[in-house]
Image (cartoon, rainbow, N blue to C red; front, side, top):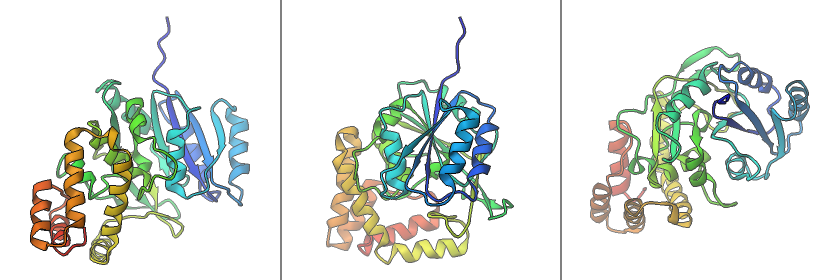
Length: 311
């Protein structure tokens, strides 16, 4: 009897991505792990994206590449709609951007690590990326986010990794799949929150497996370096983090039945902090909740933001 390796459903969201899409599709075709199918949800592209996808579909076969119509509500909703699509069934699910380049052993490495933990425990694999410019030249690495273990206390205030690195099992997919219109900040942050909050496991790989393209059309770009850190600090004290916390609280409350009792208690502490007018009580709640970011300077800034009512 032949035993087939687990199947991976690659979930790609596209919108006017014709310029770089062929490079990403070619990198999927070059994967050393071969048991995958690509599901593409297009959000109404007006460039050559659909023509490119149909050309590859003709070459690969309609069983290898399936094309769907997206919800038309932005990239977060598009990715989450793919995770919730009942017609898609696989052992593992991998989100894919339209303009990156995957290293050949990305899926092999992710599946090997996910297999080591079995199918019952909700598990999410993610990691670092190699930044490339418009021409594909390497320009750096994403920040290393392994200073502290992945956790719900971290996930409530920081996203650990990009969705373009994430691969998750069926048990995690049941947590990640959300009702339409859920007010998430980003799909990857939501995945990190709901998997850790639901008692699952997150594997953070310090070895980058994705060449993440940085260009003017990026919706979410790189976040390393002094200028990026200054930008984050400005957002921290300009009400942006507070608005993010509001959205995260609302989304997680709507899906609270997926959370463990411990996670619901921590979420309640954050909600108290978010609505607490007294700065001293806010700081006490911050410390009691154990909320933290991965790097020391940002953790100090986060504590100050909590004290000033910006969390």
